[in-house]
Image (cartoon, rainbow, N blue to C red; front, side, top):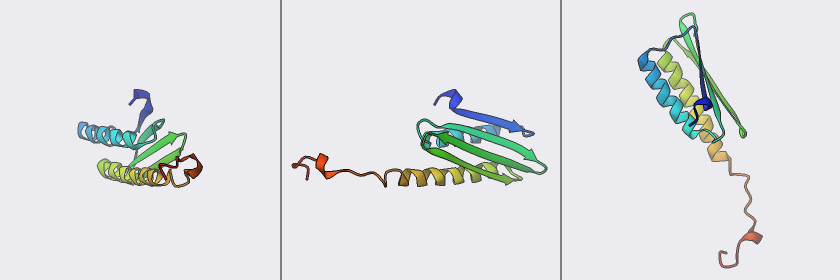
Length: 111
């Protein structure tokens, strides 16, 4: 993973060490499952008593994004993780459905 493939922006929110470790694990997992050319942007905002977490994955195959709010930064992070993982899973299951494998390119021995 290239350092510039993942960006983090914190607005009015200062993560503690425990949250930083959780974020690193989640971000690494998501980057590993994202399309190979993906750039991932995370944003964390403190809005009154809520922490808003958003994740946006940009790649040539499309954009995957999710956001969540919670009084707990950990809960908001888990919600975003679950939403993004569902979207990536859906993409992985759908990406080859339209692929056609013409039989005229198959050898007679293979048929």
